[in-house]
Amino acid sequence: MVKVGVIGGGQLAWMMAPAAQTLGLELWVQTPDLSDPVGMAIFPQNMILAPINDADATAILAKQCDVVTFENEFVDLHQLAPLAQADVQFYPRLRSLQPLLDKYHQRQCFQQLGIPTPAFELLDTGRDAGKNMPAKVGSPNSTQSWAESLGQSWEPRTTVVSFPMALKARRHGYDGKGTYIVKTAAELTAILTSQPDTPWLIEEFVPFERELAVMAARSVNGDILVYPVVETQQEHQVCRRVFMVPGWDQGIQQQVEAITHTLLTHLDFVGVLGIEFFLTADGRVLVNEVAPRTHNSGHHTIDACVTSQFEQQLRAVTGLPLGPVHPTCAAAVMVNLLGYEESEHSYQAQRDQLAALPQTQVYWYGKSVCHPGRKMGHVTAIIPNNINDTSDTNVASDTSDTNVASDTNDHPEMASEESEILRQRLVAIATRIEQIWDGSG
Image 1: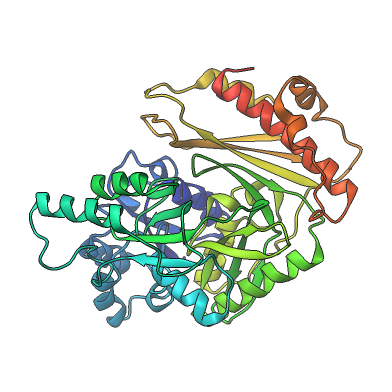
Image 2: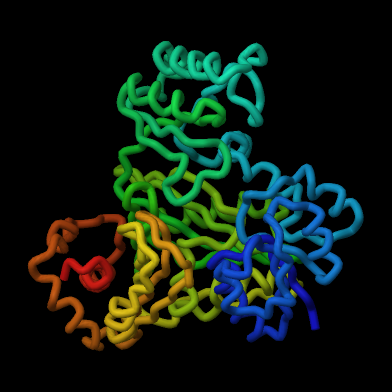
């Protein structure tokens, strides 16, 4: 039996476990605690309990496994390099990850490849990603003074990055953490002062029409498959909804697929990768960010595509043929169940109500503590291929007094009226799911 090691034991590893069982693979995971989500799906003896950036623990993991892959990108490539040199098989390869772990390096890579991305600058005094301050800065007081000075005196070095702007931490940002829309120098000063040790990237603010995403996979022998384009909607910089609807404009599809193939091929990437895009009013597609792993934008693939992103990741890194990626339904929506309070509640009543909705699957990550904005689980609802199936109408009918109507503008990027009708049905379903979850409906 082929053994696959995973660095990271959160919900992504948890959702990978059933796929491993289906493929006849044995999963081993390096994660800090038995209570991490993956602990619900694998035996304790298959867990190496250690921080994910503990290279000694990764060496122990690697001795048990034929290949090692990643649940997240919060790893130290420098510490892992000796293991790779000692013939530990990492997929994606460490050299493929190198340009992607730091958002500034990502954008430099995009520029070199001619991939369109928002204009950006490095908010830096000349030192590299490890520090954001000149060498003479040492004490906390001098660090704070430097941050205040930079925030107050900063001026753009290009003609396109100005207020409002996006301020992003170069590393370790996720689910809204480390990303800010900054409108004034005073706001910039406040953020820099509160986080003086963080290396930052500044980007132009893009007044997008929609945010898109795509999941893609590349095998060991270079085969590439791209999943259907999806639309994502964010709440406080955290993904709230993902819509899989057919019928995107052909020009948009072509841009997305061309960018995806270019990036995967250039990086010699093996595994699954997620790319987030901005779609502008004039039909341009700009790359926002890349995640070198399975991603929230692809959770719907478990229920809505022939091969889930989690099975695909395992197929890619073990040398199995990639699985088909086409949809198994007419359309689908994934809604993240985001924490809205500080609590240790299990939310069983809401989960039962959600599970009772037609054509719906509930995924609960088993986290013991809820925080505002934390991903506690997700729900995927599908519209079956029989376009006349109205089994979701009892969901949509409860949303007549909501803001669904505000989302019914004409969308020329959708290639057909039928696609837009499907999208509006999904909006109604998503709204009902959110009402049940937060108790507002």
